Length: 230
Image (tube, rainbow, N blue to C red; front, side):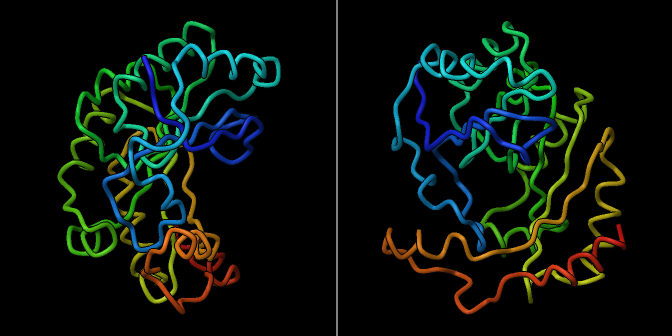
């Protein structure tokens, strides 16, 4: 079983509880206005690797992950479902805590994938159809399909939402987010992530137009004020 990997981070501290091995996988359908990883959009690029090869890399660091584990991120890991299921199984067989950092837009079979996932780190792009499509270019149907499956399986959640100046940096949006996630069980953590400019140079290197040209980084003091409404 082979998959396409963009990069790995053996000592990740923010993508799940504890110290974690973070695997950034290739492929994403969405084209979010604030995406900072455009190099992961195309599925069949990056480093081609078998699940056995990836597991061997992960297990070199296993002694460090007693309070952490493995996180699959992207891109969108759900798009490589056969590979993802295979490597998740192997991680669980080796006693690793597994997290899935996802926007919830893959190609189905979510129940089979989520069998082997301990924590869902869910990126909530918007709380309504109009703004979701404005930000991602897609309708919410597939996201809702994934979310409903994860809820049915009683998965634990971390909820994340990127806050962008002039787009959703308002009390109204944060209150709508609060109401939205009140209908999601087992939410262990909620994070408002500040929009940044880390991806701008990547767009230039890839000869792509940057959708949020001239939008400044999110003011961290304002972000703290918005957090209070949660």
